Length: 135
View 1 (tube, one colour):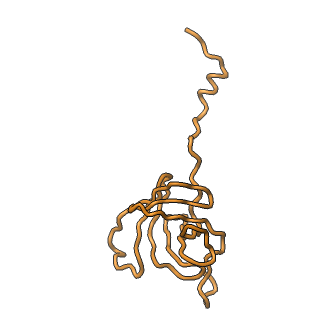
View 2 (cartoon, helix red, strand yellow; view 1 turned 90 degrees about the vertical axis):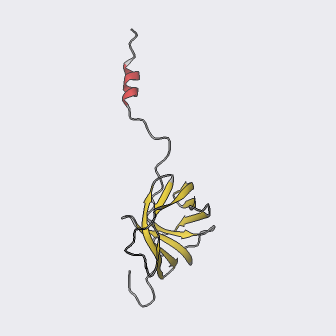
View 3 (cartoon, helix red, strand yellow; view 1 turned 135 degrees about the vertical axis):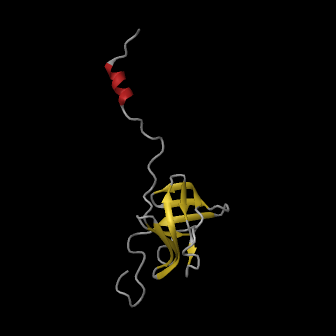
């Protein structure tokens, strides 16, 4: 029986690295549309605790909310429009299939095959409404 050199044995013991990179960190404000517009327009605010809100930048409150989870190849989400007539009912989990992902851009398709493009916005893009000091 042939013995393997110690170097080969040590290499076999190393953990195997994943071929795909870690997904971009999702929490934050992302403008929605083909072009980045963090000054005005529709956006999603993804919170680290798994909730999200659809807002209009810079200072219009939520028009819809839900839960989200980054699954790598898809973003799973629920969706309820204000004023939440279905708040106590279970929401169907839907998915945005990820087609392209960078730290600042996310290209997806929804369950109907419609493209949804998100662009990361800088901190401070979402403002408190006029007359309100902070969120």
